[in-house]
Amino acid sequence: MKQQELFNEVKEIFTSYLIKNKQRKTAERYTILEEIYKRNDHFDAEGLFIELKKKKINVSRATVYNTLELLQECSLIRKHQFGNNTNLARFEKSFGSRQHDHLICIECNKVMEFCDPRIHQISTRMGELLNYNIENHSLILYGHCRGCESMPQKGSVNNSPRKKKLHAV
Amino acid sequence: MKQQELFNEVKEIFTSYLIKNKQRKTAERYTILEEIYKRNDHFDAEGLFIELKKKKINVSRATVYNTLELLQECSLIRKHQFGNNTNLARFEKSFGSRQHDHLICIECNKVMEFCDPRIHQISTRMGELLNYNIENHSLILYGHCRGCESMPQKGSVNNSPRKKKLHAV
DNA sequence: GTGCATGCAAATCCTTTGCAGTGAT
DNA sequence: ATCACTGCAAAGGATTTGCATGCAC
Image 1 (cartoon, each protein chain N blue to C red):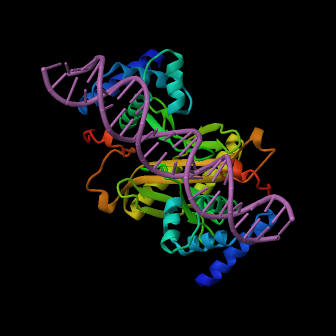
Image 2 (image 1 turned 90 degrees about the horizontal axis):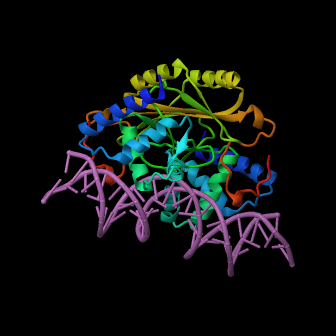
């Protein structure tokens, strides 16, 4: 699919969502949507805000957060809490790319994506077993990528200077 | 295992960790460890702090956070970022209970635990495939429990009053 | 006695909110 | 002309940090 076609398609989806929910179709919202669909990474709200700023596109942080919320609701983006060394939420576009999970390097934060049908099986099975109506899941594998493997550390979060005192085991 | 035996065992583990890392064996640290091992839930730092306060045990928030960090490093507790409707980190003791994953109700936040060997298989396989040295993983299933099933909503986070305006789809 | 750990409060980070002005309907 | 949406800055919640004191070593 050409990029322009993709933009058109997602905008259409967004539009019908906005109409259905009696939300206004503002220029800011479409600008943010387009900006997101130009990216191919796992970005955070602040990064998106900065990017827009750089391009002299004037939207406030509040609008960025607001729009991210709307886009989640119509499944045009997905939100992740990669707990490796930061609490900040990260997002990725989710239309036109299939469902996948993530593998993250604890050292350098590099993110890889993968698919495995067994995850869906597990999800279904556990839902039945425990009587939950499963709607979605999050599977994150934490490890060291090839490049960071040479200096393995504890797999835990450790980004506090106060903790830097700790001797590596 | 009797509770006292469990306490002794985890304290021993903690002690050797502290020694190995040239950390001091303070009363506060052991108190917090014991308090955690009395619990059977998925607690957060503030909740633990409050609990200690209630019991007239005087430790500061800073010490609670510090100790939680240390306990993670010696694998006596595990940290989770259940992103269902809050960003706050939750913890659970992890000695004497086997590795498991979680299923969370989007509505009421009830947490269930489950095990499935396939997750470990996936983890190993993807590590090989993508050249990562996997150290751990986090799998969370989100859904509605039996009790909350009657009022299904979007699976997304929506706890902002500003967003309450949104009409349910 | 030395210096790491503590307690407290202030600072920080990410995110949400209040309010007044703007613009979609 | 309405009133939802925006921008801005201030507030908020969770966590971290600075600093003076205390205690493990």
